[in-house]
Image 1 (cartoon, rainbow, N blue to C red):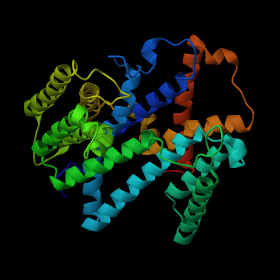
Image 2 (cartoon, rainbow, N blue to C red):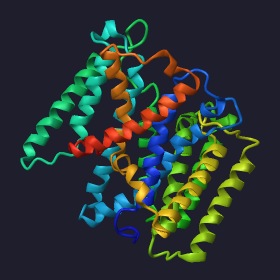
Image 3 (tube, one colour):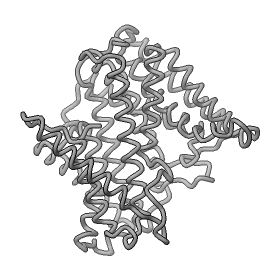
Length: 395
């Protein structure tokens, strides 16, 4: 083990993940509703503000950071060698990048040039994702490998036949990495940092500052041209990595037994961390205004502070006061996040393939908002049912 962490699943982390996924489904759905208030929409890139919608993606990043120490320690405890661990990290990163690229390119698919409709192509893609990344329970392992192989072949074929753009000449390519791809880059960088510095909290804190500093450096005029201009392409990844590292540091504060933070010492450390994030974000905001689209330092730091506060509240309720019965509703999504993430898209493209349309009233104003909330809850129940059918995805 790199650090000595508390054993067993942490209910507060699972609850945080499940709540974040529920809110994510809601905000993704409500984005297509007309006449919703501005506080339920993403802020534009040129605005110096953010809404709760702009905190959902960084909450995912933060939770990834909280989970990394547990995941790495678990694999080392099970006997993974150094290179086996790196193979697992790289394979997981590759999976996130591949999924991100496919999802980004779906909207731009040219049906005539591809030879199939967008809905059919997307459903085949999501079906292959389930085949490749499902956790199978067959006693005959060859059945699992056959199913994974079929899924991989379908993915390759879909990538080869894909044509996008109005003229149908664009191939499948990383126009941008998509949400999952951005998580993948931040994940691999954070894993490298955690291992290199052996989970030392002080070093992790300095690397948060280094990531923010790297972003600021990339915004300087002299970086736009010349030999180092390629570094600017990593500015956003560095900013996202800083959020992942903030989640990682909070995990060490709460669950690293070697640190031994309890009682007032734990409270003072967490409150101090929260205050530093807020103050640093405020100091940087005049120069780097709040912007999720541009992944500015102020946005990263404020969102991390919000996540620190939200998780601390959940930890107090669930792990200290043991008020945990209500978390069972979020457990299926928290333990099967990838399936929960793609499930709304499967439903959406399934409806298109079947030529099903919602009543127009559900696409506007308050009725639309209520529908999106009900849809998000329904997705959690659907995932619960799929879990019982042993459909559980794991990268």
